[in-house]
Length: 467
Image (tube, rainbow, N blue to C red):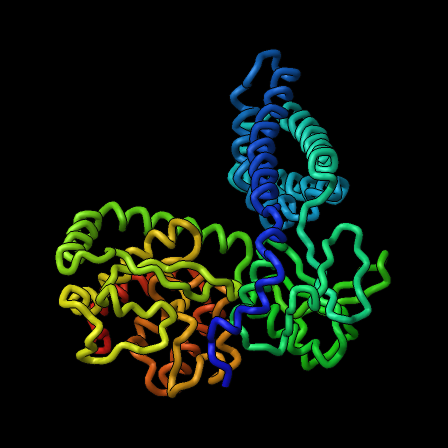
């Protein structure tokens, strides 16, 4: 069993991986989607206003606008589900126009269907509605042509970041992808070195697609790593059941076929919802709990004059390191930055204030700051220190699936914690029980479950194994 020691980090000295981190294109895409969504609403109203003007001779004719505003919610509902605001709509204007026309036609048909059965068709002018639909179709098509042209001009047509990792395979000579050498960055898919995994996580940061080209005997290891990193991952390969492929992608222009082995645990909509929930809860909690946080910080400072906060490197999303903050509960001269020694009952390192805040979980509250900065979520697998062990084994030596729990951001609380799997990990079962709960949470994530876990956490803040 390899120990996590400073010698283990020697492989990272030769390269500054941070310099390879690419800017995120996801925010650009979100801005483009939002622009299209708002513009569609404005254009639909404008088209029907013009139809009413031509039919009745005055602007913003009420019946024409009633038709537009009745159609708009239906149009948005259909468009959001049929790919009108999807990735391909930003690069292929003809595809984008087809999807928008389908949404427009179905929403118009539904309004007419409901109007017929409710005998409210007389509320609408057939001529102004027909003219409105015609102008709406022309305007929506022109908008999509313009958006795609703008993306080609301002973004050079690039709407996704694709990273190709060459590990000695047949390669993927893609002109729109960045290619790096696994050997150059000392990336070994069979290794359990957390420093190597952190290096890989940084290289994959902000990448939308990761493609690995490697020999047959290394494909399973790479498939596992891509699943653990929580990215959309492909492997250049012929189909192989043992990889657990979830799809096949053919690059016709490059004469290559890849197996899709990972897609990330959450889609874009789910990530937005989860992040909004995190920000709302963390900001509200910091505001409400600020008197308590100030009082605890003052008590820690008055007890021994040491620092109020304890900063420790933990494993986060994509197996990347991040600095987690807690209230300091140990004596300043006995702080354990690597987590090599688990806390025990009557631990001589714990201060009097520290014993109280650990029993009540108050020591974890500064992690609300980590949530706001984006390193953590309110709910998720709890982050562990590098030196954490059970039965004198590192967690990843007990079960290799340990790395897969890091495909989501770590949480302030989690499913394992509300089930009582918390405190010291003395036996291997202490780790496997938590891992099973973490993987279950990842596979079955929902906003309602996050809310449920937060409520249950409030009922188990104090527990017998907190020492």
